[in-house]
Amino acid sequence: MTAQIGEIIYYKDREHRMCSEPLGDYFAFGGERPAFESNCTALWRGYVGTWEILDGRLYLVGLRGPLEDGTEATLASLFPGYPDRAFAHWFSDTLRIPDGKLLDYVHMGYGSTYERDILIRLEKGVVTATEVRTNGQSDDPDASEGYGIGAMTVFSTRDKDRETR
Amino acid sequence: MSYLLGYLAIGVVVCAVIVIAHHLTKEQEPQIETESLTGFWKNPADWWLGFLESVVVPILATALAIVAWPLLIYWKLKERFFPRKVATSSEEKSFSVERSDLLVQITIEEVERQEIVHDPHGAVPDLPFGHLNAAWRKFKDALLPGDEVWTFAADWTSEWGRREHREGYAIVRSGEPGPFFCTAWRFADAA
Image 1 (cartoon, rainbow over the protein chains, first blue to last red):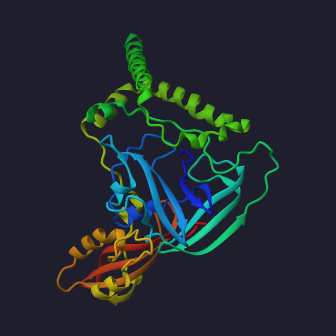
Image 2 (spheres, helix red, strand yellow):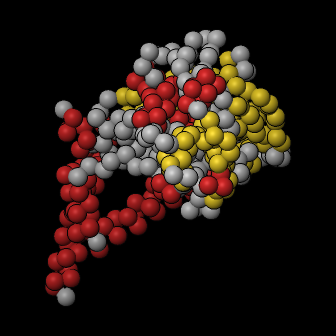
Image 3 (cartoon, each protein chain N blue to C red):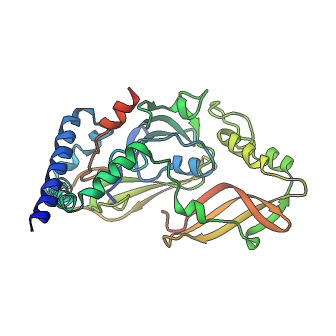
């Protein structure tokens, strides 16, 4: 399994990539999952959500992902009536936000290790604790900064496009 | 020998058609989040990952396709005429609430009172389980006369060997837990 593209999160006025998928819990708990078109080995879930911690609460503020019918998923299509933000009250777990330079790249899931992990614990969408875990220090001046992936394969969607036209 | 060569020749033609079709459709590929890759490639030590995925894997796949081209055609036809449904994980299918996971009996009214979600930014409907209200109503629809609702908490190891903890509400029918509504799901090895 290829390393996965992370969800985007705005935390303390900075954009980060995170190694957690809060929408996965939403779908597992019975939330309706649109038929995402997974066309990339680095994005098996088929979408990228944009999140924000605001006033100690986790919100989904954006969503991108092609659907099997050829249209694009949006926040409004997933949460009708909430086109700007949806409170992630279903999420009771820890968000992991890698920070700093890459220490060890693992081309699978979210297996890579970075200098630091910002761990944000939430209970029903509300932040209960924040911790910064130090994993080490990179002595490689060329090491990449912040979460990234090394490679991916993108599949053609032409057949699907033809069917929907 | 000539049969084998003929078979492989068909495989080469099938592969060529697929490769040409792939190149013709390249401009149609959605470019989701490719910007996340920029910067990462600046690290020369990681070039081999791209080489592996862009060169080695396609070569191996091509060789396999030449040998097993009838399967390729079968899959292509299957994909076209029997499109796949949204998959659910095997973990979800195999998890069930056991009697030993049950905690306390509770009424629907109590659950709905304590599970109403509020948000100061108005980003959730003020309903039991908020954005998951429709799923909750579906769960309630499964209740039959005489059924009980219990809270549950379960530590469980998935088929993949991953230890997890789940909490929620379960319907108990004739003493046996059945359908459940999950409200928390944590992995034991999570950060």
